Amino acid sequence: MAGFVPFGEDAEDPLQIYQQILKNPLKFPKHMKDSKINYLVSILLNRNPESRLGGSYNVLKKNPAF
Image (cartoon, rainbow, N blue to C red; front, side, top):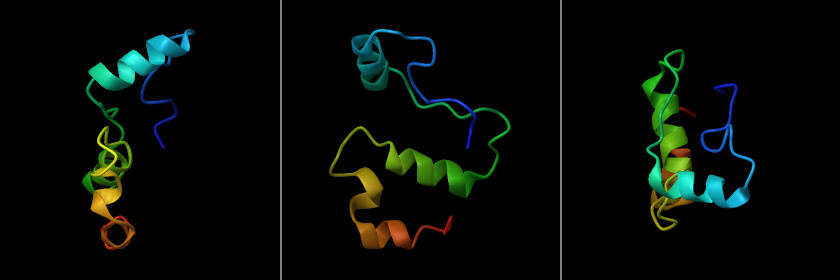
């Protein structure tokens, strides 16, 4: 959707990518203006596995992006 990966774009070491995932905030490029899609991507990339997908598959299916 964005044309690049959210973390580790310039990292070569997998540990650097992992550290970026844990520490860096998720940022969307300026051309991604649809708040429904941005919200969907943010819940899919949630760092907390229990919160990922909005808590359940059924909640995810009800997301306005679908």
